[in-house]
Image 1 (cartoon, rainbow, N blue to C red):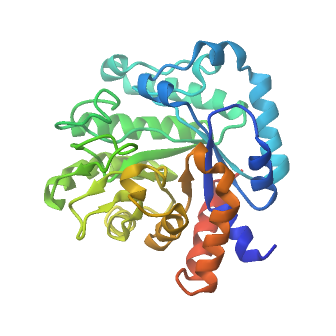
Image 2 (tube, rainbow, N blue to C red; image 1 turned 60 degrees about the vertical axis):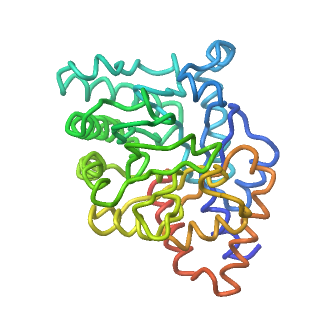
Length: 333
């Protein structure tokens, strides 16, 4: 296997909804894959409640077995999951409890940081080193995707809680992720299922960058891009494929860490195109780690070959692929 193909595998970020490694994921890790998201199914994501059978069957020993197996195959790796206050906490009863949304609003900030740190410390003991949280979005209008799933309803309060969450997680030695950049105050639909737009100008969108800036200043190691299509850029583009929005993140917000896409096979992001093309375009735009849904797991080899082919054909500079892989290395442990 070529070094370029190994690098290509390292930039892919597959989701599994099970606490297990399929044969396809074992092969992926053995060929250079460095990251896995242990996710939830659609109903769990929508309700924020893990299935009773999952809660009863998953144990610390089971998590240790799987996360250790990942590292046996891949070496230092990114092992990620959601740990949201107002949405999904993937580790359910296996960590110290997070505060609720209402508790977070009135809780002393020191206590809030300690509660988050206790959760992250338990996650680290289970082998997890990246949380795809906190949510830095602020809902300001119609939003069928994120309504009820954010930390608070105003920019200053979300900024305060995002900063505190990041500090708590860092205190436990775990990396955090700000999502979903550059903010989605209004969304016209569900990005996973339809071509949903954020119909705001850049001027109107700019105030909603504040929670992301607060999290970056607090030391967040990763930023997760939005799947929605942003009318603020010309032509309108999905957040995960927009070089303009990634340049805004890198430039104005001075973020130097890991840039993660949304599920690239979400309808708003992929549109009518092939996933082979979209993974290359995300890397070209400046993303580092490319999230793909469980449905794409059987095709990880083909996606890596598409990235390798783009380098060979001159569509993707080798230096961009190397930089993406290096950014992943800085989070992998």
